[in-house]
Each structure stands twice: as C-alpha cells, then as structure tokens.
Length: 329
View 1: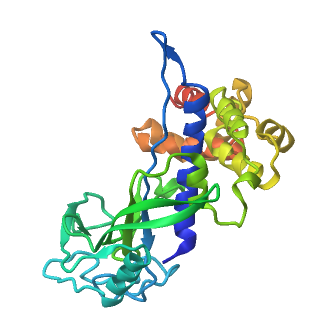
View 2 (view 1 turned 45 degrees about the vertical axis):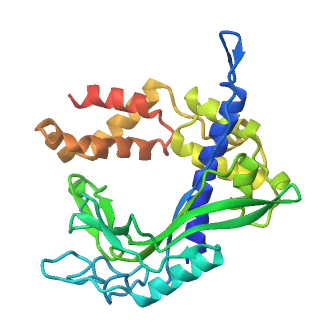
C-alpha cells in the first residue's frame, strides 16, 4: 500500500482532531446549572489506501500514476453497457495479507455490493464496494503508550474501487467547464475501519507519527493551534494562509503571530487596497467583464481568483466577494 498517501490522510485528520480536542478541553468546559460538563474524546478512523497492483481492480488497465488524462481506460472502468468486471487476484491477496497482519478473521465468503454514487468520475452511477460481507473482520493493532500496550480494534477491512478525478476550469476560457480524468477510476482500494478506541490526541499522534519524532518532540503545541485559530476567527489570516502557517510552525516551532509578522502574511482588510486589485483584475479581463454582465455569473469565481492573485492570497475573502459584486454590477 502507498504509505505516503495513508500518512497524508491521517495527518490531515490529526490536525483537525487535535484542534477540536484543544477547544473542547479549554473553551467548552463550562458550568451548566451548577454542573461541570466535560467532554471525552472518542476517536475512530476510517482509512482508504491504494493497493500497489499493476492493473486496476476489475480490468487490465494500468495503474501507473501521472500518465496523460484518460489514457488508461477501457469499457469496464468507464462503465460501458455490456462490460463485465473481473476481480484482480493480486488485489485480493494484498487485502488478505493486510487482514492477517492486523490479526483479522479472514472471511471464507465475501460479497461485492453496489453503492450509489452520482458523480461523473464514476460514470456507471455506482461504486463497487463491500457492505454486508467484508473481506476481513475483528482484528487489532497494538501501540505503545506511556510504556504500556494499547490495543486498537480493527472492525473491518474491505475492497472497493477508487473514483476518477474532477478538475474545474480556472482559465478565463474554461471557467464554466469541468473536466474528468478516468485514469484513477477502478484503482483498487482497501478501506480500514477502526473501533472507537482512541481516547486522547497523544494516542492519535502515536498512530500518525511518520517522521521519527516522539510525542514530546512535536513542535506544534495546543497553544500554537489556539493562537492560529484565533487569528483565523479575527480575520488576521485566511484559511489558505493558515496552512502555510501550520507548516512553518511544525518546521520551526515558532508562534503563529511571529510567523505571520515575519512573512508578511497578514490578511488585507483595507477596502481601498482591495478595490485597486479588483480594478486591475477587471481592466486585464474586459471580455470576461462583458460576459459576466451579460449573464455568465459563473465567471464570478474567476474574478475572485484574479483578485486573490493580485493580493498574493492575502485579501479578506468576504470583503473581496462584497466589493466585487458591487463593482461588477
């Protein structure tokens, strides 16, 4: 399985959970009618990971990453009428190995099912997955926590097909279009579902650790996260800039306020400055201005993007939307 993809998914989940846990513990512990209401974190994970097979799960198309769009497709993975899927033996073997490695019971009988899926990156209108009869069940993994073993239950592991990739037009001439690449459609996935057995951010961090740091060596503290969330709430930085701030916090251990000040990442709240950026964007794209005023309202997103480019992503999105709507009337 692709460990880097799994780590990325888990790291994103950890960032969110640790922020929420900090808020729950420090902000929302409040007295209600004289009783102290306390929240206990109960965390379970649902993880999707690609299997490193050479071909897709139900056809012979290649799974090589990075090829030209729609060059690794066939009637089966594009859901053409009359095409019949045939299971990839190697995908089943890999999934069974994962089940054995996590002490699961391997099912003597498993069944694929149709799961409703109404997005264009799976053109047949459903995803082939497993529901009532998964491939493996009732396993566990063990982690070390404070010098003791902690068991995390694995409820189930099952096979399914991945969806394709949608790409929405960003250039002026493609702003009203969306494109689909079916190369990823049908790549084999395993879905791993854990029990609700994680009770603290420390346990979750232990699961997500991928760079050989110990928990007490993590440079991002709850205080750092709280400061960053406050800066987002107050409009000092945007959500987009916050991602860059987080990376810098992890790399340097610095407080977010210092990072934002040193990097010049403070959000632009000055209406005059934003107005100038809007005017430049409109002057550079007169045809799109004309088309928008004739009814092509989908171009509004294009203009928002142009203004954000002019301000290097630092303009306050709410102000940009408000001022842009007035200017484009």
